[in-house]
Length: 261
Image (cartoon, rainbow, N blue to C red; front, side, top):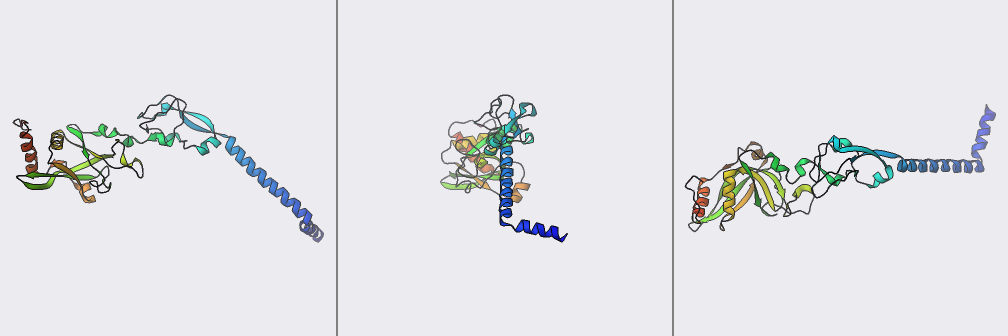
């Protein structure tokens, strides 16, 4: 037994033997790494592609998808969705389309609420979408978000005196858009708010539109705290005197409110 151990010691302490073993191990490691890289690059992977042309804003369904094999090397350099579950029920982004046989890139697939016109699907009967022109200052450095409840304050002059008071309360913001109609919050930075969109009763919409054409009336959004967002009631006119001012100024331009408008 001692002789066998001595033989192993002499074998592993021999410089030539150690050099050869080190070389063999190094070659084996390099070969294994090379084989792994080749297999990883060449071995195909099944990914979803469109089985027909999909236009912008189309909903992606299971029937729109088929699976094909793609080289792993290509997938490692492409921002492609590889899981069918991440596609079904999503939508093709505006400004793009997916051709038949095309893969689904992450920049082309969005949730429904990210589509510019998706808010119109949820408008209750008797309500109309109104968009209020704003800027970075009037939105408190872009701090008004979809889902927030805000009030609208009106500023005007009456009998030479400045009037500034709450006009409409409890409005839920549906979207914040830039001047090109894009969702301000689709990107992390770089888009300036230009419009707040919300739904109001149709008669309220009419007064807001009329106010746009009266030169000495301006409407200002006023955000509220979290408790207000949770517990505020329905959207309503909070100052009938301001409503009457709009009526009076409009009557001067020849409008007829004799029927209760």
